[in-house]
Image (cartoon, rainbow, N blue to C red; front, side, top):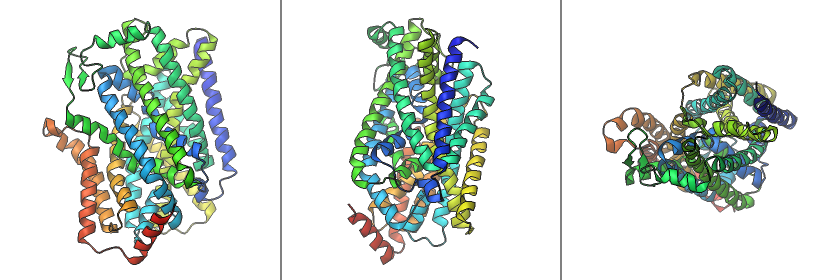
Length: 508
């Protein structure tokens, strides 16, 4: 192992040790499942904002997004970022406060809890369906994080992909199972800072190695369609392919996914003071816009570095940030330590999302399926044991799914994001803002939206070019329409449900 690799490894070990220590410290404050899954609703505005967005961005920010920009230019990555930026803002604007107040008023501590109690669904069918959907889509989502860790260590140190993935999973599970929600949220705040530092350092160093900003732009402008928002650069032909209005709308539909993301919605439910949400919204939106913009620029700069012979052409575009950090580490011990921070930033992206996903999936199984559906009456201590065991089992399944080293981080995240957005997004919006919605509509809409994600991606999209759009858009519309129609043709909600809706609406 070289001196540079040793320096990087030291920084990463220190960083990972800090995460585990935080988990151990919070384990002493985690006394029941309410603390474990929701932190006792005590998140401050800064922690809420950065925890929500760090858990949102995942390894996609430092691997998937720059990788897409590196290969095809700014169009696809750009419209995705615009959609996500708009979605972030409106999620905080219209959902955060209403969900926090509503969930606190009815005593819900998980998303399936909220749906079930909101509609007074006594047989817990709605709760069970929501919990199963969370597990279905979060397990592969978590797998994408483990895959990112495997690629990271394999590229940097030549470590076997599978060993690196397993060790990373053990560390993530370790601090999450110890400290629960508070540990995950606190480490997310730290990880968001590390991610920000990594993005800035990589961008600045990359520009210098590419020969300056003018050289980067000259190279990008020489590639047909690379800097266009309406064309994709084609690396095979050297030409470009049109990116039409339907494709733009489809790509921007990424923003719809926010309304159904359990790990983000849980942050809203955990806010201590609803009056501080405006501050959280501003911090979150600004950070998301800036970080995604830098992520896209890193892809463009990376290609400029290749053109300037600072980097060799990449076989896997998603490793662009890793390659730049590796190059930085070869310029002395000081910069090697900085490179370690960058690599820790990639780990931060992965860990901040994986811990939140593991908690959400674990809560769905232990609280909503075992407790809600099967009515297992467990003590608080037994519930904590079950919660941690379930978390470990889900992580093991995630490792199995990510076993293929060729798995795409961007591809896995894209599909899981669509699944949650379509299954939960319409239900959440209607549950919060339409009093006439009922449990029948919620169940039908949830099943229809989630099912359409699979149907569209694997059947309908391949039938014609015009149908080849991001599956979230048609699936979201399907879930919304089915929910509304079924609610209208079935019985109105009971007076108790209407009264709770009005009470939540009246809360300021």
